[in-house]
Image (cartoon, rainbow, N blue to C red; front, side, top):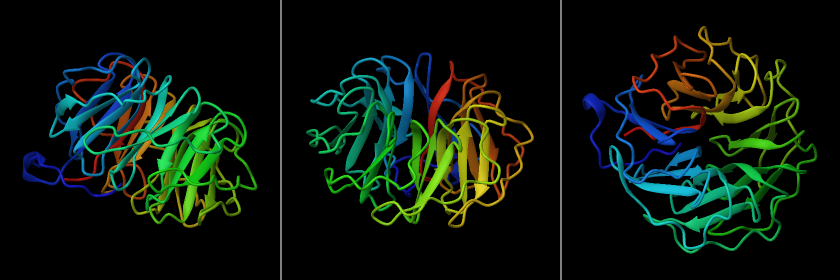
Amino acid sequence: MLLGILNSQAIGGALASYLAVAHSGSPFISAYPWSSGFGTKYSNPATLPTDNGRSVDFSPSVADLALAHDESPYVAAYAWSDGFGTKYSNPATAIPNYALGIKFSPSGLDIAVTHFSSPFVSTYPWSSGFGTKYANPATLPASTAKGLNFSSSGADIAVGHDFSPYISVYPWSSGFGTKYSNPATIPASTVYSVNFSPSGNDIAIGDGGSPYISAYPWSSGFGTKYSNPATLPANEGKGVHFSPSGNEIAVAHGLTPFVSVYPWSSGFGTKYANPATLPTGGGQGVDFSSSGADIAVAHNTTPFISTYPWSSGFGTKYANPATLLASTAHGLNFSPTI
């Protein structure tokens, strides 16, 4: 994640950040101060999302927080300043159906949303609110789009979706360019999550079929797929994320141990040992803090989120937040450090 500037006070006089979670059950989005553990949950936004949260993202400046959710208007975006501000107006061109993924560009000047029905991805300029929707890509994703991410430079946008080729990547410059060629080895099934390495030299996807995680060199197009990890994730890869250093890659998955992390150096290293205290259910998403010192896993059974110190391996699980999430955590995002 990019470092950002926030007109907010650091927690306890030290550098701090936030952790936001998209979840089922009202209030559908929850946010906490984060400083090697959960602080007291922030008050809910005055205008709640209308249904279950699916994906959440802070803007690079940490001045905004956006959520993809079920039910119209399918997105909710708020000003953020050490808590939820006023909800921004809905986009003039509405998202057509359930929103599943949301992401700000690295510059913070654009926002992208994946959704259930055609055109499957919608993008807008962003300047403290939604601008006029950009034109759809000339070649649409093949079906319902889920995973979504911009490259670290902001020059490319990747969309994971149902139906072959399961991943579509486009040049991005305030609009979609011509879709890149499909990878020579296409993913096995629906792509739920996609992430570029911080260097921009690699792209990784989590998908619904074995090997559940796949990675490719990236240079304005897909290179030859890297070898699969020696120890595969146990089930479908619902979330995949590189650490800020690019030296690790994590995947949240459906069966125990629910999260797997590997060293990364132009390929998968030997899987790190599982955390001593596993997440309690199917992994839905994973993220590293902006410092790389912590890792969080969203999952589908209480306490719905598990967090750990990270230093080339899992440390002792942090205490659960005092105010637990209402239900399944579908997505989560650490803000940049402030």
